[in-house]
Image (cartoon, rainbow, N blue to C red; front, side, top):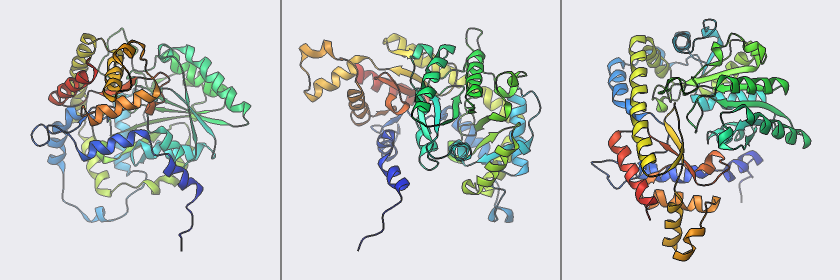
Length: 442
């Protein structure tokens, strides 16, 4: 006797386990600890702000409460009114919205992953395309495609065009190719500040993106999850400007086509609480459909209650965010001094938890020679390829005991690139850099 076959969607999901999960499982099974496991794997890959962890633990432990009767009941699946009010206050204080944000325009979800999947269900029919600038956040393919069956379409472009209006030419070609195949694109997904490049889009680039979306009848989802992790506000760099703050948004797109995402995981260092939110002050239909979907992403009533109390202490929140930005700036300085000293190629960043870098070719040569795949005479002809990038990545985890995700996981067009998270403890960061240098030394 045999069990009936799983659905075609389930079978496809099983066959598409992301490459990055292979290393993450090793990391989870054998994490570094200075005292108890010094030979464990350094986590310099997952985007989590560990720099403020002690500050968060102290605060959360001070406000934790005994369970009450309502914690045992169903709560509002799209977030209690009190919680959404505090989230609206975050937007009002830090995103400079043109008009005050209403709690009624916010839907709280089970992380931004839940919000992204719900929006894909709401906007896309199965097989519809979602255009995203590459390199891009590695989980989007699963968030949009695994169940909602949107087709994530990373638009490959030169790195030097990633923050320039020139990239719109690549998007025009991508959408023309989609239409030539008889398919539809329904969504443009943007991250500002960018993941993995760690910079805010200049306003003129976002304006060009929204105009493109309008011309092609696309929804524009703008993920601003790193908005409050901007650590470089110098005049030389493009500032973060939320689309909520634009007085002329309707000059580029019907605002009803725009949805903004934010959440706890990045700016607030609370990945494990699994809480994100979607906001659209301009489209009640989007908010209503997300509310309809929200029972599939319930959070515990206790979690909503504690986070409401956490966010309500506005003096603490604003101070914590300032401290966080200072710590990110300090760690970024450590990283850039290391990268400059050892001639790593990298993209300077101004926000977020990571830097996008290309490992020196010595890392590849060292790996290939250790495997016996090349001779000393052949070393000068070695170039980065997708295949040897993955082999170096395996070596980094298994041999040198440091985890950073490979560029292929971000749909990088050029091999040899990796994303290095620097928002970890300084001691652990230094150990990770030492191990990385060993991997790249002749």
